[in-house]
Length: 159
Image 1 (cartoon, rainbow, N blue to C red):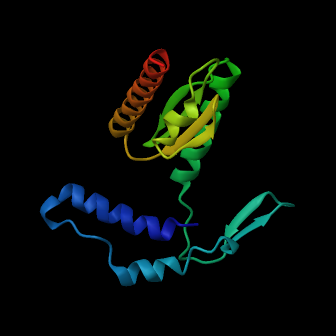
Image 2 (image 1 turned 180 degrees about the vertical axis):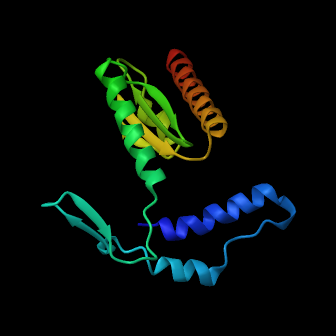
Image 3 (image 1 turned 30 degrees about the vertical axis):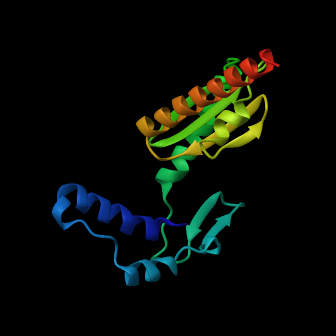
């Protein structure tokens, strides 16, 4: 139900793309006003008739966010149904990383460096910082993890 607020940010971003020298943040008063129309209780679901209605004419649903979340989840399910358990998905700028390990690679340590979490052999993270930035951070996290593992092995060998 954040559509009324997100529209202001979207409009400001679009304007800035077309007019970089005139770029500005959305007006604070307009954001405050829009935030009054974000309550999830404004969404009325009629199970009997299979309908949904928004009771506030100024409230909006960000269907793009819903669609991206749904598409990401479906893509992840498809990959996992094909026994693919480690992947990076980019669905409209929303990036979903799933790491699985069979053996000695601690994917939790790697993905925690991208603010994700999980367990030694299964971890994940979702971000929207952009593909290039995410892949750069992921590569650095893998490289750093590998360096730590090699240093630990060398330290153990010298003892």
